[in-house]
Amino acid sequence: MPAAPRLAPRFGLRAKVLVVALVLLAIPLAGWSYLKEVERVLRAGQEQAVAATSRAVATALHDRPKLLDLRARTDAVPDPAAPPLPGGARRVAPDPRAATEEIELIIQGLGRSSGRIWVVDRKLNLLAIAGSLKRAETPERAQSAWERFVTAPLRPFLERVLARPTEDFDDALPEAAIAGGRDVASALDGVPASRWRHTPDGRAAIVSAAHPIWHGEEVVGAVVVEETANAIQSLSSDALERLVTVTLVAFLIGGLTLLLFASRLSERLRRLRDEAEAAIDSQGRIRRLITGTGARDEIGDLSRSFSTALERIAQYNAHLEALAGRLSHELRTPIAVVRSSLDNLRMQDPTPEARVYLERANDGLARLTTLITRMGEATRLEQTVREAERERFDARAVTAGCVAGYASAYPTHRFVLDAPSEPVWIDGAPDLFAQMLDKLAANAVDFSPREAPIRVALARRGGEAALTMTNHGPPLPAEIAGRLFETMVSARKDAGPEPHLGLGLYIVRLIAEFHRGHARAANLPDGSGVAFTVTLPLAAAP
Image 1 (tube, rainbow, N blue to C red):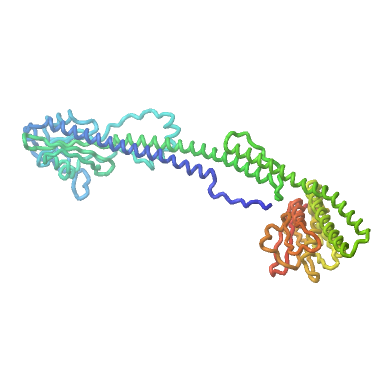
Image 2 (tube, helix red, strand yellow):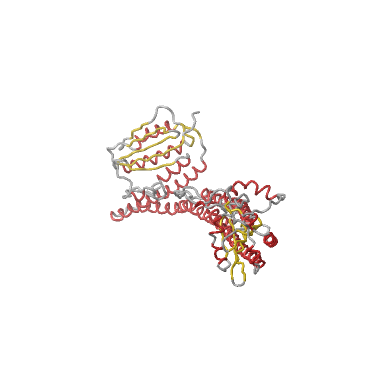
């Protein structure tokens, strides 16, 4: 029975488990989406808090026109030390004389610790400014064990993928924010407004809220409160850092665990596959049973099922193997009775018509006897092959002796030997090797014309010995080319006077496999015959 072809695994169990584990990426993605949503809510809350502060400061300045009328002798002027902005505009620095001391006290009292407040009149003159957009530096806290041993090694990677806020940004008030800000213009029109913008160097995001200052029904100025989003971004970055770190560690531990688990499953399945393949030999016989595991899972159940099925097949095969021997033994007695009866009838001077029937019966009995004998020979040979002892012998000498004997065994055919001059050492049984040659020779004689020579070649090919017997005659039929060396398979269309069970080439395969080799047959390139080749491993010279 030919071995089933084993397909190369293109996508193994371990790879499939790891791919399935990628579904867990949905968890950190959901976490990232949640953090972004929280950041959006915090920004909205910050925007509302800044708007509330601007409203409180504006309320403190409502209906106090004298504060806004006390202006400096000069308006706010551009800061000459500041670099120019895109479009040629320059930042402006308030003249310390541009606001009254009372306004400064009010906006300082109502200001936020990390924010900046400034006041303009309707002519966009900067009256007062207080506070700073930069947060005060906080002392570094002691690192936890997680941060020292897990986060710290990942810090270079985290710094590449996560943008952390910085306090090193340009916090100067650009002229464009005063004269061109939509929030300021809206507030001077009597409508509170807020907006997000970036610092001139683009390193920080600023939320600003402007609220009008009323005197009666007239807007006389505007209060603008500004804050950076660095605090929120710091919280978001810290949370994202922890999320990424925990995700990487969890995926590392989970991936290794799944890989070990999948490797364990693959190893168990591979061991079960190897045991199943080794349990049955090329003839379909059970060589050894699978030892069912005690694992209480599906693979354990499968192993025990295989073991039970192989045990039943082994019992059935043993019954079939013993059946031929029992039939051979049981049939010999009635055949002997029939033969003696025919002999007695022949001795009684039968009529010519009866003599014809006696001859037919005698021929049929002879064929039946031959069949039983060959069935017994095949059974005995299988037993001999299993129990034969190995020895080192010269295949060249055995082949030469057999070919010389074929001249007298088959006088109507001519055998031609092509063998090397040096010994060809093989580890096996010389008697079985000679019997293999006899089966090949008998098969070649049955199909070869009398005038065509039968060539026997023995040669070394690397570390192997190749025995080839070539005969002219009909080519092999395509439908049995792959089953020629199986039992009960024959390419003979006309059975002839001698019965054939298709056991000759089957015996050739048995003996070749006993010598750790293999046999094959192929049509000659020109289609004029067939070449049978037996390849056996060479043994070291004694």
